[in-house]
Image (cartoon, rainbow, N blue to C red; front, side):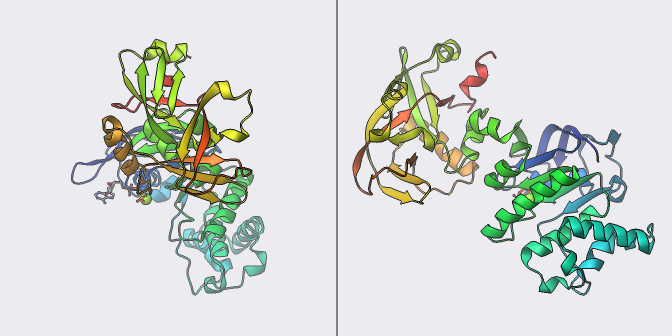
Length: 390
Ligand SMILES: Nc1ncnc2c1ncn2[C@@H]1O[C@H](COP(=O)(O)OP(=O)(O)OP(=O)(O)O)[C@@H](O)[C@H]1O
Ligand SMILES: [Mg+2]
């Protein structure tokens, strides 16, 4: 087990394009660090540089206190689990797990047997040891692949989207499984995914990447509540944060649904900015008829035409079509593209109490709590809160 330190890591492929651009990141001993970001942002490249499958253009990769830039993969003693974990179809589960040990020729049969049985007990594979991979479920195969990583007593585990081939239900189960196992073994782990739900539920900390550049490293809660910029705010959270124009007007901010007073902190750091992007999470809206009177002074009430209502039993979402003004339409379109967002039209998504009886196609009165509203500078995307001295 070991710490992983990355100092100013750069990767330029043949065409000079920096797939990873000056990333510095320290991973603590025993920590589970998630690398997340849209397709092509450099997650796999970074992981492959940790393992040694990809040359590092510049910067230092330090594992367990040793600079490993020039060490071959086998000398780094790391275990990697890929998306397409290849098990040997003609070998039993037992032999699949034992494979790396037999290959190394360092272990006696007794030692191998002890390690395989230890791993299989941890992974609850005991009753499957003599079966072939073809006769296992997807989740069981995944566990065999992990068993092969475990027996090696590696300094760290590296996962590259190991669950993306599984169906949604199994993915949920395996996610919990990996988290439990990682805590039990206490092995430093780096886990790559482009799925923000996986990132939020699995990691001790999450590193968000965009186009090879590290945006923010923080706990899931910190990322959700205090995103440093528009990109992180838009990428983390499902359904995503709603982005609305906010025009500065004296001491107030004009939102599409009414105006709210600006806090003194915001005023102090605003400078001469006249237009901001306000970010409001779906859960900070509510059916106005269900909002406690004591809460109402903390937000604005407005009428909205609800297009579609999705009732999911334990939650309920309403969609309100919304045309952003031309001044920020460009930034919002870019944001959608950058975050791999799937929505086809600009709309506001609001999460309503399941008691709400709002129906499709109705006009209704909604409440927006502005206390947790984020304000972003359109040109740079920075969160204004970052300017407020701590
Ligand atoms: N061998 C290569 N030669 C040149 N460019 C490459 C090579 N491998 C990757 N790239 C480029 O580097 C960038 C980062 O790729 P990488 O595979 O690390 O992305 P990723 O974040 O893992 O994406 P995904 O979620 O799709 O797996 C991409 O723009 C990609 O096109
Ligand atoms: Mg990848």
